[in-house]
Length: 273
Image (cartoon, rainbow, N blue to C red; front, side, top):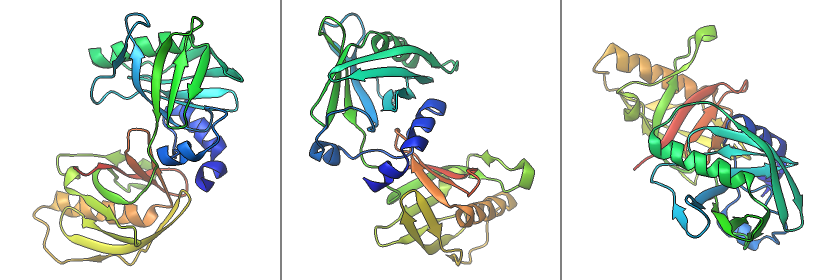
């Protein structure tokens, strides 16, 4: 995939600093590759050993753990925090060096996944993959972690806003409120962008080139009066954020982010439905 090839360094840095790669390899493309390395693919943990390697257990719902490797550096999500570390790869042999992680506290199920994840990753000795899945095993040959290749990242689809930049210059930041989820976006495969800005329906066009996005600033809107000043302000923030956006990314959890040319987040979305 050209996008992946052009952003390998950025992906590795993102995996280390944020735990999420900004673009991923599609499962069907991974199957088509001559996969002689597990590198360059975002792998999403499906099952792992929790009480010994006798049986792998599925992750609890809504808990994400992931692995991305490139140029001797690895990272991802460990269930609660972002993790990072080095690795050595020699044929089918794979070992990870000392790992580190951010220090956020999370609910019990997420912390339990993280504890098992970091224990298992430290004990990895080999890997095997059919392109669509990755199995990591310990020194005794016991499979301890089972991953699937992440689905292809795309901006196309229906999205619900989770945060909108308030456009306050030097004090700008992404904010959310009880009405943020009323803002929607639908990116069609034909390059049309439509949605609801919290007050009115809007429509425009967009173009994507790799991780670059250009949204036509000539955004049309219906002319309904906003029911409150707060919604009117949020609507204007959102329209400004769309016109500021120059790049897009989808993280390993499937959430979409639009950023400006300086890398500042403009809008964050979750998949609709």
